[in-house]
Length: 236
Image 1 (cartoon, rainbow, N blue to C red):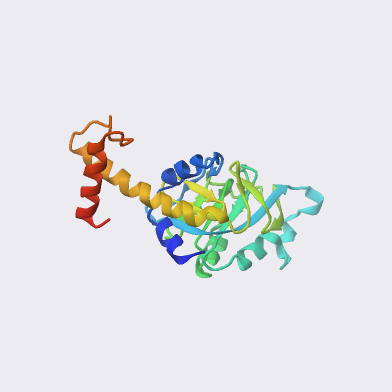
Image 2: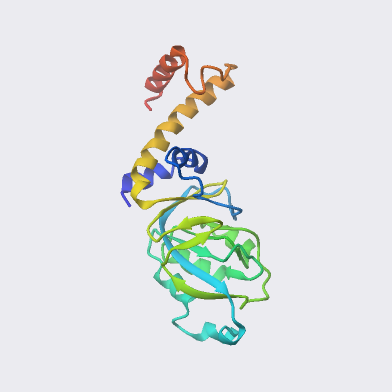
């Protein structure tokens, strides 16, 4: 990822990025029903590395599968690149954990930027204390470990109804997680940055008691003139 793009995406919201994507006809890029375990962390930004689960077939997925060093879940944890985000397709089913505190800690120590699942994590209170970006639907019970079967890594997946291709740019904030198609990431970051500057101006004006009519959107010349002056004064 372009370092300038990463820096810009650290400072914009998923809501603003949703608007920029909507302008391009992309309506399903926000991962539905996932929440940060620690909403006080900075934005999570990184390229997607994926793990896919499927419904387990019991004769092929006993608890002993975790002894296999090539188990896809273990390999995903060990192969996810530094600075990337591990995105997990758990079929929106949190009855069994996508991962737990030990595996998430390993991702953190390897320099991964974060982890997202549309299922759940076990040990979620411990994960929340790590200071590491982690998003899930809800906590998973520690039983039913083999309800899901890890089947593949770094392939296209669906996560919370959003399409995720390896290398797509993942952005998470206190509201949730959005998926940026890799080829659009630079222009989306630049546009969202400009949108954020303008929305900060609007927020200031509204806090001063100004009406949104003619201001948001800026259909009056006064709004455009005031914005230019506000921006120059703040060096933005």
